[in-house]
Image (cartoon, rainbow, N blue to C red; front, side, top):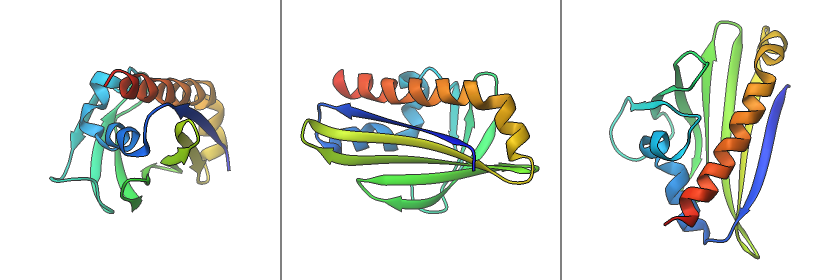
Length: 140
């Protein structure tokens, strides 16, 4: 399955990193690869929560939370004809504070074609998102 994964160490406790990661409504002001976020339900993220995300150079997508461990991780999925994209966000303790791992995996009958078209953009976005979360945590 095509995909990309990026891990960064952040000199802050996991709960502080988690608070930035899970606050998806504030991503547009913190992460330059996110233009707009619209939560499609109220309250904190839970399994089943849906969010419309607009990113530069990509069509708007609705992401549905499929797994969530409060304080540690969430995974969400977005689908379009022939392609499903799964993105995971994991915060773990690290001797220097926290470790943030972001991963994007692509599956489905059109995934290889889609991956060929978006690989470099996706890699750039995941790298930028990891650095942006680190910067947002550091500035708090």
